Length: 80
Image 1 (spheres, rainbow, N blue to C red):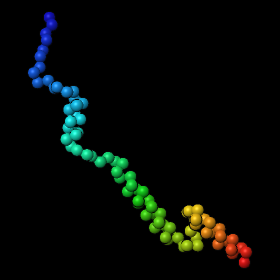
Image 2 (image 1 turned 30 degrees about the horizontal axis):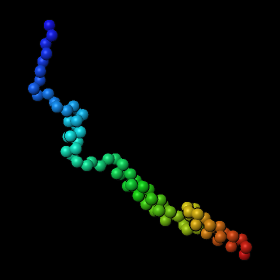
Image 3 (image 1 turned 90 degrees about the horizontal axis):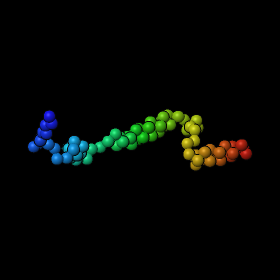
Image 4 (image 1 turned 135 degrees about the vertical axis):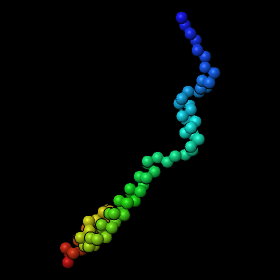
């Protein structure tokens, strides 16, 4: 015996469409990548604070310009 059941209240769209519609109603939602810039800002601030505690003559040069200035200053002291 085969029975055919009919449902009058069956969904017109699939469950995925229902979930997407619910999500769209909530509007824009930020994700976890929005907070990554905060880590970079914190690390930059921490490095600058640590560098500030080191005496100027003992600081390692971090940029090419700082390295060249250090080499130029060092070459000037050797010539004297």
